[in-house]
Amino acid sequence: MLSILVTVIGLGLLIAAHEAGHLLLARLMGMRVETYSIGFGPRVAGFRHGDTDYRLSALPLGGYCKIAGFTPDDPAAQDPNDTGSYMNKPAWRRFLVIAAGPGVNWLVAFLLITALYTTYGFTDLSTRRVAVVTGGPAAAAGMQTGDEMVAVDGVAIGSFSELQRELHKGVAERRIDVLRAGAPLSLRVRPDHGRISVTQDRVLVRVPLSQAIPRAASDVWVSSGQLLGGLADAVLFRGGAALSGPIGIIKQASAEVKRGVADFAAVLANISIGLAIFNFLPVPALDGGRLVFLGIELVSGRKVNQKFETALHLVGLLLLLALVLGVTVFGDLQLGQKLFHHG
Image (cartoon, rainbow, N blue to C red; front, side):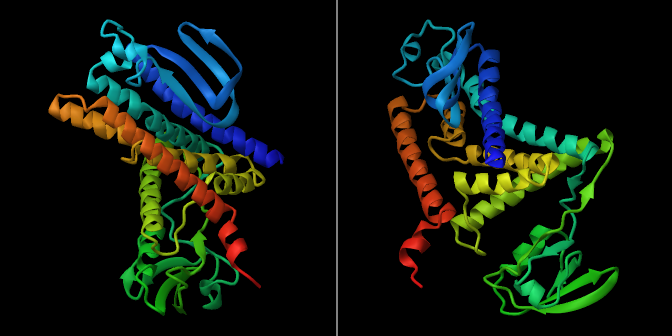
């Protein structure tokens, strides 16, 4: 229970940072922020500072930043003389405010990874070494943890993600060349739906700050690409990839809490990158969907019909809620298997 509590607090801090990005940029752009809330629902505690009510709300799942004039039905949006209204600001200012939330999540990930590199150490994302899962195809073929991937069927492997892409090509049996303690070795492996049950080995690297900064920036970039690729695989049902809902994320992160603060910080960095990627998706109701409409306005010089945009965001929100519910019920909780699988 303690590890779950710590995980929930950690995720709450990531969401708080996301909303703080919107808050700070809104103020910087001359907008009036009425509410900054961690959680949804009734106000439990908080304080007022200036125009803003900083609050902790009853349902600690997410959070929000309410900017004056953000929606068309807000009185501030209908008053052309309200200088603090979101709607009365130029499109480029509104664009920056929306982009600031995911941007801060990337920044948080960068800071966490930088701190880990200079203290405990951070996993070398460029390593080709693997950790073998007991009972999987790789283990059955004689592969061992610490083996360094060299090639698959003669195709050179430069990274773990390249290994995954090669394995997803669906060939029944693969020849995998590895280096074991510096000695070359060829193994015949029969993948299971493009997977051989290996993970990237944890090779921790510690470097001074001057090296940690560029490495962390590179790692955020690489991790973003890997998460986007994994999301595409899950959506297209490739390689057995699957989405995780809130319960699945909490389970995975809480397991790392038990291993130590540094491991948990590394997972939080990865989740923070995931939040940035997810929110930047060009889907209505997400920050990315709003940026699409603002991009159209910037190019055309004309605002998109506000009622149409609001309706589309509402539909997008309902679909996202349905997706999260479906992933949670049938993915995290495996309810579908429990209902329909017998024996």
